Length: 138
Image 1: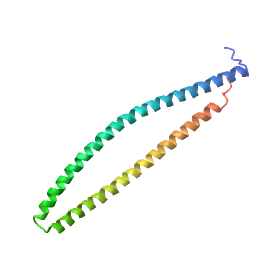
Image 2: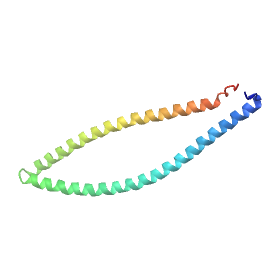
Image 3: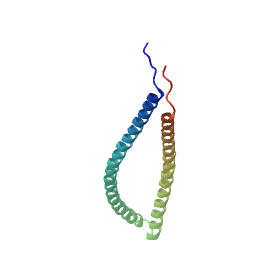
């Protein structure tokens, strides 16, 4: 059997090196994640701009369709009633879609809070593990 008699100083040095290496790895991972996040955010910004432009053209098309529908309704009822019917339909659809969207956002927020909580717990556990004295080697 090999003799594993190590001095307390050697064990402390090894534990210090291990903690420093772990801290270095965490710093490197955070730096990598920041760079990745910055790249993703730039892509998302371009995508958001394209979505906004598409939304503007969609609104223009929706307006043209709305005018056409209003003219069609005016051919079978008085103009004020046609406008009221159309506005009521838009309001009803808008309220329903808003309620659906709020429900989805609330579900997403719960998942995000859970994920953040889990990451915080894992980081705390890893930090605690690096603080513990190393087990004695026999």
